[in-house]
Length: 462
RNA sequence: GGCCCCGUCGUCUAGCGGUCAGGAUCCAUGGUUUUCAUCCAUGUUACAGGAGUUCGAUUCUCCUCGGGGUCACCA
Image (cartoon, rainbow, N blue to C red; front, side):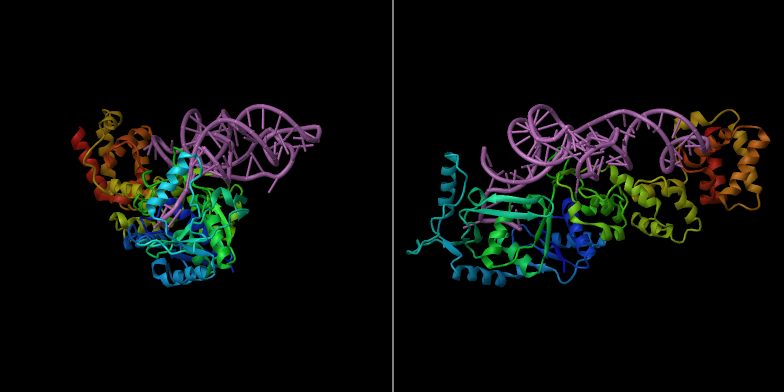
């Protein structure tokens, strides 16, 4: 059974990078009919908040990433950690260290001055005298002093660390008794039955420490997959400063969940030349062995392209529902199909699409002067007036083609080019030179509104 | 600085000793569209550098350079 997990610390919203590792973990579990677990790493009481944890859950919900089973909260597992710390103490694999923070700082400064690497010197490793007064000890694990630690990584391959280069007897429990990150991660991953750890490669250098914990506890290590970072345009680790990294901000900007998922799955992962992946295809095709080794730069050009792709391919009734978040109630609009069909090819975001809807359904109050100048000629009023008369008296006027026929009649009778009526009519209806097909626009707003807008335009510009 | 990871078009990537180095995006041009957008077609642009190994290296090895990550009683 493949068990993956996502283990955020609730210190803020869910960001793009976290979402991508969550997605990878989710997909790999689903692909293998396994489990995708969620663990909230809320041991840092000062920085954690309930709101942040809720924000992560909200983002998961929006994107449809469902986790399995109950959520594990590390803050509720003190007894479990205490038990394993005691076990290591009893077995002599960990020990109390009475060095004060000041002493430790001093040691580090000396080491830096001597250009040595900063590390704990192990002075209490075999201590069995009487401990100094007034010092609450930390608990340190006995890490190997020599030999290699090999991280067998599904993305990076085998990475070998020399114990003497990177290890010291690191702290597993603070003076207040609370356990530290590298300890609880190993304990939880094992206890939760996690078999595949998929996380950012900024954790690669933590992994040897976790392996030390696994070994001391006699736990089997999971498989690791360290996925490369997402960088900003400066090539640095993506951070909250880099603008829109809050996943929920994408909802507000009018991106669809499927867009974001598709965009992220292709950032650092690929399946041949395929660019478009439905959720089902992702679940079917994802494999961490196809994650590439190098960091990728976060760039939203493709995000926009994907979003317009998905908008174009979303059924109108779904689109209408998605547009409700912008205050548009189109579900019962009688020309909904024409309206959305005309607009879905033109918008990069849902928000933009909502704006386009408003542009059509609102009577223009402003006319682009350059457009007026270009479109309105001496015979324009005459042309528009004839068109207006014809639609006023016309029997059937519902479909775009009905309006088109009348435009055609005017063009034929007056022996003019199509642009002679099209350009001024466009300005009259929309106040500018660009927009959807006029026959569509008129069908959407209807006869009365069409007449009103033409009349307005003639009054203003004759 | 120590340790670790990485290096193909601007960007996302394919490639797993022999390819005109492919796709996507972006950009440009042309076509379609009365306009704009869509759509279609075409085009510009890449193997960081240097040594090896090999009949042959983008691909394997080493070095250099460049970038990133990490070195806590944070996670």
